[in-house]
Image (tube, rainbow, N blue to C red):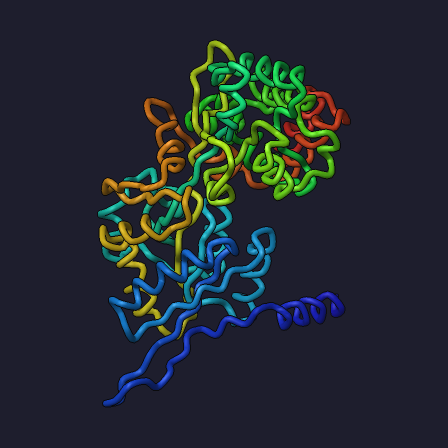
Length: 416
């Protein structure tokens, strides 16, 4: 145990240090500048977020917010260690649902309930991911949602006389046709593990099991993960396996994007956050919804991805609260929409116009369809890792869909 404690302290010491606010002397007449840090798991967003935070500094010249992201898979563990060691950021991205609730319960996330605009400017469904189980306490200000869809090469579709599939059966037929014509239909791989679950499996689950009402039944044990509907989700993954890249076991998330952008694969199932990975491709592309099986309504995974909260131990709580109040205002949300990375959608209840055609294409997929968060995030994060491994095993042929579903049900029983 002593060795583990020493190792944890050494690890914490090696992490980026986030001083809880600093005050620098500036100007004259005793004025000073407060420097706050903001933690994030979005390393790709540094340019956009620095631009966004610079807009805030125009409004509050004496407050500088420094964006300090860390590698996405390491964020949860890193920020926890920082907070525990007293070196956590002043402001930070907050995961939704149970992951964020845990840090609030641990005394690290502040209570944001009474920050002006929080209760007034967000509808209940957009606040819910960052509320405590009492339904009253809000631990972060909603910032952005993301969506899931199939990116596709329009030029190849036109060249081969192909159309956007309306059902999952049509989708599989499309994949088979592309393969017969010498194309790799899908770019997705499993080397990074998380993405095959997050962007692929969790995008198709609502099409098979239903929306939020049905999700609640799985969460409470009314429905079971080895039922026909959930087993069909694994069957859909198995059916898609022949259309993944050759050697998909070694294909990383970045590899998938390269395969699509270099036209070595015709489609890739991914999130809206990847729009900016394809800034100027030599072909036309767009997105379509992950299709539902014939007879089922098409549902969209539109995930409340991130909110921003502040550190309960910050030296400058008022400066943090002022920033979050601005974020919860029409002005702040409008500037966020203009400076957020493309593919992140403001959640405030004011109409926001987006300039990017592909971002608008993602949003258009929601029209007339039920949307829901990623299936495991609200209450089932204990199943995240088991589900991830089950999906990979099915794709590799190491488990049948029925075996995978039974394994997840066995895991779920432990937590009910």
